[in-house]
Image (cartoon, rainbow over all chains, first blue to last red; front, side):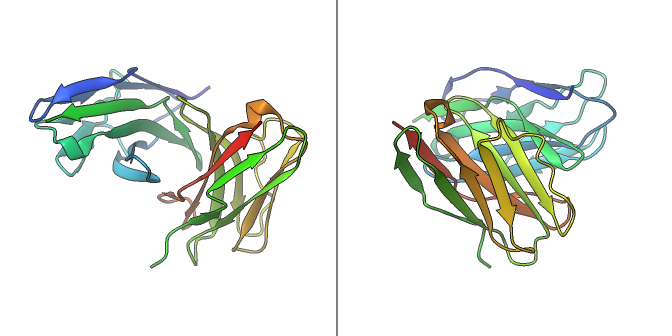
Length: 110
Length: 112
């Protein structure tokens, strides 16, 4: 069946460091892919998405490229800020339902 | 406009009691979803409503779980005879047809 695997956290970085959170998926066909973010005390928010192979989603300095060859959708940011501290979830859409990875907690220190 | 709202935000209940969780979707959104997020884990799909179609209940973990939706508005998730393993955050989301899902803040359920 369809599934999403993402790197375990927590990931701890200093401010302005480069961020990569790995995400790979198993799916039939080419599903839409998403990154969601959950800030402390807040609900889940869509961060970015890509709907077909080679698409690059981007938002708030974060980027992720849909790679069908490696079935990956890694999240990257060139320079993280303390305010980026949150839990990040990779997800794919299977028909209408979202299938999520287990989440990666990011802690950015000043 | 208003987002998805859920109530209560927190619920503590004793094992064996029944609980009802409520979700108010964004006005005009035809699709509504319930997910469960256990501590340290990703979200698990529970149930999906789309308009007047029969709901997809394939994610409900047992027959103690049920959900209803009135038209294209409020939904209620009911858990009967709660167990400790039911402790989790229950998230509701809504969408315009099957497009982007907007999530509510969740209900944190603790079964003691």
